[in-house]
Picture 1 (cartoon, rainbow, N blue to C red):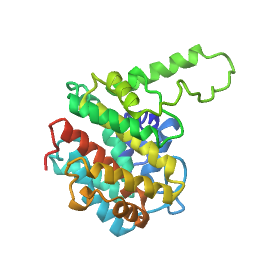
Picture 2 (picture 1 turned 180 degrees about the vertical axis):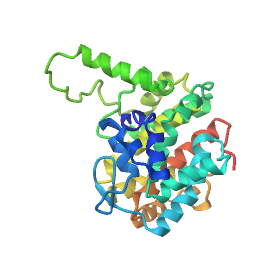
Picture 3 (picture 1 turned 120 degrees about the horizontal axis):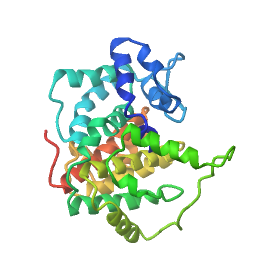
Length: 300
């Protein structure tokens, strides 16, 4: 989750470099931003790399067309406001046409300065908070370890200056030449989903709808990244996930998306050669679920 959050101040430079053909903007990217650049930049070998370095084929023309069709939906569902100007939409469309992934655009939308302002809005209502907590608890069972959420993660996105200050403080407090600490489990794994959901409700009770959507979206991407090494396991997860949400009475934008049929969604997942579409289908569902529960459905 931290990967995209650290890139928000630099994403605009990356997009400009694609839309204008300018290469100087990319020269300002720090090593920590390299992963988002890989999401957006086709490699010289004709492959576009995922964040963790796994090569994936460049999208075909038909796949690019599908992604452009989904782009407006993404902007609308994530921000709750349809793109209002041709320049705004064409900017993102240009990046997608250059080979950017839907995941890359999604991270650009949900880890931006505009998102930070959206996250300063009033706390989400109780129904959205409860849905968020329940889904977050369920997602933990699909990961090897519970993610330990800090109080900072329940707040709006930090600024670049806040991130830099936090990193400098961590470095100044570290012992000289000390090795990077190994990840540790900070609490015993909670197998009672109801108890875990209660903890999340308490931790995020002052968070805005947009903070909840960002955090839950990042967790969905973590689960997919964890499972994508086995397409069969990923398809099983997606089928169960989509069928369960299909019983929530939420309109996910297409009638087939709403089907509570695990086998149908599992077979669809197995048929996809580009997992980018599966990522957006998963993200679309959790965003629309929280939008609906908050009483503020996305405008069409």
